[in-house]
Length: 525
Ligand SMILES: Cc1cc2nc3c(=O)[nH]c(=O)nc-3n(C[C@H](O)[C@H](O)[C@H](O)COP(=O)(O)OP(=O)(O)OC[C@H]3O[C@@H](n4cnc5c(N)ncnc54)[C@H](O)[C@@H]3O)c2cc1C
Ligand code: SF4
Image (cartoon, rainbow, N blue to C red; front, side, top):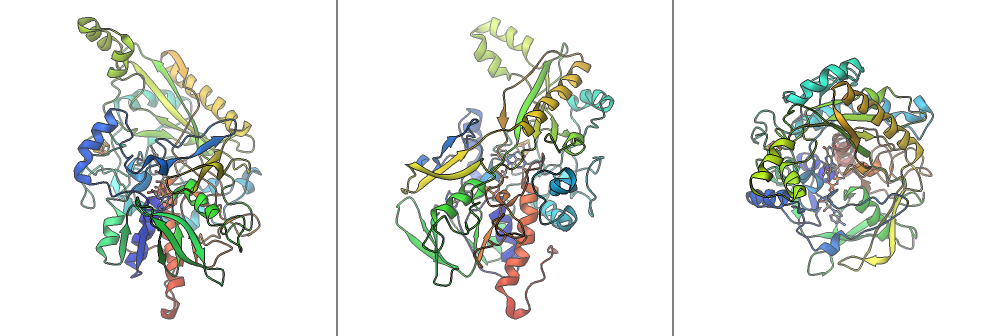
C-alpha cells in the first residue's frame, strides 16, 4: 500500500526480481503533461497536489505544539516525492548509535556500514548530484552519480564567516539532475521545485514506478485507499480491503503485504486493522504502533544586507553544513543541520502586497527592498518520546467513515536547546557578514514524519525487525521513516530508499524459498 518513496522503491526492487507486485495507491496518477497547470497552482500558493476528496486528508492535532500535515505530504503516484525538495543526504554513522555514544534514546539494530551499499544503490536510482567535500561525512564506497550543482552567489558570501566559525560550508546532495540522467533532463534552475515542470527533480512517479511497470511485474491501482488488513486463521494477513471514490469495498489477496503509507497513515492503518487477535491494532502487541512520532523542528535566521545579494535565482539551496549535525554533545541537546538559503527575505510580490502602494511608488518600493536578505535554515534532531504519537481520533471520520489520525506532538528541552544553540551560531555568522535587523522566524517543522513503527530486535520495545518485518505477523512488512529509531538532523528520504532496497532482498527471499531464496544484498542494475 502506498506509491511514495518507500513503496515506489520497493515495487521496483521486487518487480526486477520477477515478483508480481500490486501497489494500492489512495491518490491519483498526476499526469506529467499537466505540470504547467500544477506550477500555476503552486505559484498561486494553492496545494498543487490536492486532487482527491479533501475528506480523505482529514486529521486532528493535540499536544502543546500542533503538527499540521497541510503541505507536509502529498497523495498520488509519487507520494510526497511529488512535493519534496529533493535533498538526498545520507545519515551519519553516529545517527544510528545515540544510545552507545551519548546515552540517549536507542541504537538502531543496524549500522551505517550495514547500510552503505544500499545508500549507494539509492543514490544511483534517484540520480543524486553531489561532491565528496563534506569533512564530516561517513565513508562512501562510490562517487555521487552526478556532479554537484555549483555554489551560488550567496554561498560565496557565506563561505568566509562559515570557515571562521568552523562550520565548513559544503555541497548539499540533491536528487535533481545537474546533467541529463536516466532519461530525464538537466535542471533549468526555474525554482518551482515543489512542482518540477521538467522532471529534472527525482520523484518516484518518474523514476521507480514507470520502471517497475515496464518489467511487466508491477501494477499500480490508483484511487484505492486501503481501509484495513484482514487476517487468516493462522495470524497472517490474508487480504487488503480497499475502496475508491465510489466507496465500494474490494479485496486484494496476496502472500506478502507491505504497508508504505508514510509514518502517519501506516500507523493509522495498523490501528484501523484491530481484530480479535490484535485488539489494540495489527502488529501492535508491543503497544508501540503510532508512538515515538518525530519530525525536524526548524527555524530560519535572516538578516538584511546593505548591498544586493541576488536571492531567488536558483530556487533550491546548494550548500549546507553538517558540523553541528555531528559534532555537538548529543547527550543533552539535539544536533542541527545548517542549510544556506538561496531564497531568503520577502519576494517581490510579498513586498508589493504588503506595501499597499500602486504605480511608480510601488515599483520604487519593490526595487528598493527586494534582494537584500540573506538567511540560513536550521533543522534540529528530535528525540523519540513515547508521548508524541499518532492514534485514532475518537470523534472525526474520513470520507470512508474511518477514524482519522490524531497527532499528539510536543517539542522538548533537548530540541529547544538545539534551536537556541543554532540561533546563536547563525546569528554570529550573519553579524560577521555585517547584516542588520537579524531575526529568527517562529518554530516550524519539516515535512518529515518519523517514528510510529520503530525497528528493533526486541518485540517488546519495537514494532518491526531489522528487515522491516512486523515482529507479530510473519507476512507483513512496514517500510518508510516510521521504522526509524531516531530522527538524525538530516532529511530522511535517502535512508527510506536505502532501507526499502535492503528490505526487498528479504521479502524476495521469503517469496522464493524454493529457488534457495534471493541473496539479500543491494542489486546490480
Ligand atoms: C514539502 C516537502 C519537502 C520535502 N523535502 C524533502 C527533502 O528535501 N529531503 C528529504 O529527504 N525528504 C523530504 N521530504 C520528505 C519526503 O517527501 C518523505 O520522507 C518521503 O516521501 C516519505 O516516503 P513514504 O513512502 O514513506 O511516504 P509518501 O511519499 O508520503 O507516500 C505515501 C503514499 O501512500 C499513500 N497512502 C497513504 N495511506 C494510504 C492508504 N490507506 N491506502 C493506499 N495508499 C495510501 C499516499 O497517498 C502516498 O502516495 C519533503 C516532504 C515535503 C512534504
Ligand atoms: S529548479 Fe526547476 S528544473 Fe530544477 S528541479 Fe527545481 S523545478 Fe525542476
